[in-house]
Length: 344
Ligand code: WQD
Image (cartoon, rainbow, N blue to C red):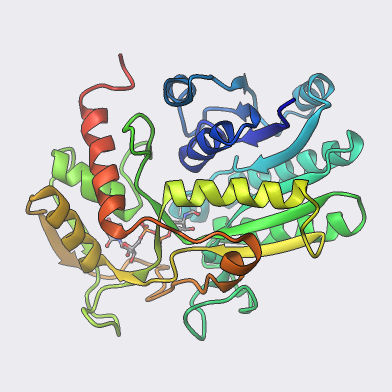
């Protein structure tokens, strides 16, 4: 009998890739998503990749009554992987209460129902944004969590605190995974990042520029104290990231966790500048990208990349895919989107 996992936000970018990896690892998956930042077509696409569409509930985690009905129907959950949250940094600055309400109320409801229905394991989607600009690089899980740069980042910090405090007072065990910069798409080209409107993030903006949806990429600053002057990030292939979630949930299911609240950085351990990312894209596509160097973006940290020793040692997980494969997969997905893959 396959163990059953709830993936909240499972039609989203990282969630959908994680559903694929969970199913291909033998788990039964159910998905909750309110489709505020995704489309149900992605659920169909998951079915095309794995041969099995996950049971999908279109609902909002802030709807306590609907959530109670869901948990009554799914009392056999072995674990929850919680992705569902708003995540646009700039939007969170313009509308902080929307972010605090959605991201925190949904988490609190989930945790209360986990206790009520004795669901023992939680994997939480966190972010390197909790570190701000670290004092030392690469950044480890022991680095001080700093004043968040945005309400979005603050909801991740507060969420980790809520989880840590609540698992101390309950039989729930939790792992928080701090992502660095997820990019790329599934090799099938059937699922990928679906930015709604103008992308905030670098790689979807690169691929939309290359496909002709955007006139040019603005490179936000080349006057940082870095080798080529552009900001540095730790870009990680979304499939490597998805696989880490399977490993994390298996750690909890086997009771191998050493504490009831554990935190792991998920990156490659390698810093890549904006210019290096652009050059990698140009190399794998043979295209010349239209970009212009402009001023720095408010709130950007100059450079951050992960120390992944803990994930390597404790989870036995290490990112496998390189920058060129990330760019190749992102480009295939952009071309498929332009060809109407989600319309057919
Ligand atoms: C990467 C680099 C930009 C766009 C954000 C969130 C983080 C996580 C990942 C959710 C930076 C530069 C970007 C562009 C550019 N999200 N850039 N031109 O800001 O590192 O992280 O997304 O969890 O929480 O903060 O990612 O892709 O926006 O930027 O020059 O049009 O690309 O300045 O140096 P970021 P990003």
